[in-house]
Each structure stands twice: as C-alpha cells, then as structure tokens.
Length: 182
Image (cartoon, helix red, strand yellow):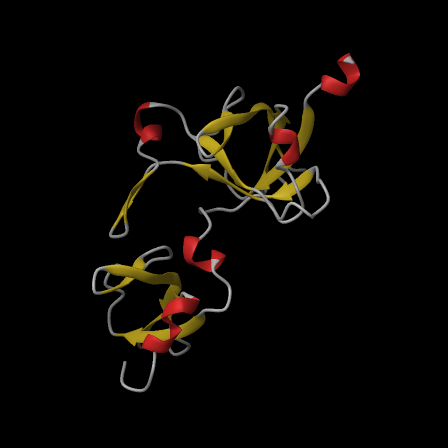
C-alpha cells in the first residue's frame, strides 16, 4: 500500500527558472496538486529541469498534452496576472491534457502562460500591421463592443523591419465579424 501511495514524480524542462524554489507548489484551479522537490540545470546548462512530486489528485493530471508554466507577476496592457506571487513565491501551474491521453512523466514547460483564446478551436487567425506595436503583446485581448472575442498570439517586426505585425486569433463564434474592411 505504501508503494502504491507514493507520489508520482514528473520532470518539467523550462527555458528559465523564474524564481521557482524547492518546496514550491504546482497548482491546478488554485489547488495544490504537487510540490517541487528538485531543481537542476540540464547537461548543456541552457535549460532548467524541475522535478515535481504529485499528490494523489495530481497523478491524474499529468497526461500527454498537459501544459505547465511558472506563475509570476506580469503587468501589461492586458491586465495584471499572478498578483498573489508579488507577496508570495512564484509557483507552477498546469493545464491538463485530454483525459483520454496516456499519463506522462516528462514535459516541456511553457515560458509564458498559455493563451486562453487558443482553447477554442475553429477560430480564425488574422495578421494585423501597424507602424507601432502599441502594446500588442501575446495575450493582449481583442474586444468587440467590450466583449472579448480573441487575443494576440504574437507580435514582431515584418521581414523588412518596416512595420509591426501582430498575429491575432479570433474565437470561432466571432469569426463572421472578420470580413473585407474589418
């Protein structure tokens, strides 16, 4: 029984550690589902490997397709996120893969939180151009009549570096708002 109830260990590889510490938490919907028990650099010294011991509930969440990221304070035009980490320490978060996927033990962590709009498949991707980025960073919401209809996926300079291009994802239920002249 002791062997069966021991915590399952998973390894998460991140480009940066972002202040995660041994003893830090892995949370799902605000509930602690794991604890960081080891942090090390990869052999190439280019990435950080975080070993997490999952709790009983956490064992079911680490499936193929699960996404992990470090929650830390972020302040931008899209709003404020990770405010609880201003006083407390940074922690890990998980968005589990599909329930029918097999359990996994090694995952590549995201450098930024996943974009919520991409969880709605069947939308439309639009490329916007401007002379200035005007705060269009990944995760910035796109509104229509004060209703969120999508978000910015990425932004950067175009090929000849004369303009800023922003890739925007519009959720499927609002794709008919995008037409000639929009």
